[in-house]
Length: 476
Image (cartoon, rainbow, N blue to C red; front, top):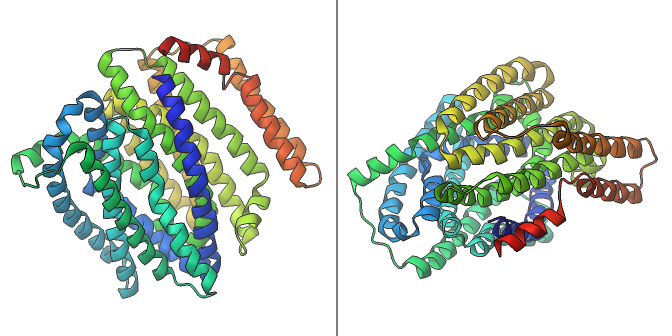
């Protein structure tokens, strides 16, 4: 199982490294530089509004599909047509709910027009994710990897052509091009899936839909709560701060890199979820796979966060043209929150696959209380930095409580011998980056920092090649 995880992880990371960084920094960041912080801040806020309730189009069906196909692959052809019909009904419900929220917030005609297209985009993204959940459940990770980058690949070509041909750009164009790219990707993913399962028969069965909702509701509630404490920062910031749209744009500049790294973290989660589900089904030990995944993701996140924190001004100047100094505090706090996110990606995924949804829902509800109270307390005085501090506190809280709960449930063994390599690793990367920050800046220093930090991953056995090799031999 570890071999399948590592090989497909390498493939998915490689493909995403080829496409998504260029999309995020070459396209998204360039568009923000063109349209300005205030205009992009409006888009970023509306995007998060459209994210907030998108679970209503899924109700946990994707996670339910991945888990059950991984365990019972013969069921997919019987249920797909019914689920697609049900999704159209859920899309209508989601659209009404999101538009009502927009009315409550007080949006005008332009905001509603942009939000309408973003709602359609969310439907297409959810549809693509649903098709990908089948590939993941079948353990067809190569196909899923291709579909995962296709929409961004199309976006690069279409947006890139416009950005190169004219100096003018409107945020509306960006949203419309996204709609086209998502639509084409959904069609291609559906056609590929049909070759595997055949043409589904679309039909509406209320009893079936009710049963799916009943089974999926815990997943849906969990994801809804996660969306609230993850995506509400910019919405509150744009609404309650005196210069809200500008501050939301500043927050978006820091959030973009965090979101990019989070997408790569989600690759781990998407691979681990069906593998954990299958291990629980076959009653095999999850600890070897858990250790491998945690060391790779959390060890790598510590290195990434240290590099971004100590070189924050260089990174911001490399990506953006405006509001550099203003973006630094929120960017640093947001990058620190990535560590907590990675803990949650590993241990939250483990608990979800194991079925411990009640405790995850409880912790997520607490996280919302932490997030909302800190946002309302800090945003008025600190703006984007206050929202970033709230995000850091929330993500650290949720990551730690999930880790502690998993430690007790699965009886993790703790001893000085097991813990001290992690402590030494953290101290070593902090020392490396702090030392090089005191020197005159040069690109050579950046390369040396990363090489020494990566070397520390291996020295302190965060990535143990010998152990992985032995596991591969055992599985063969």
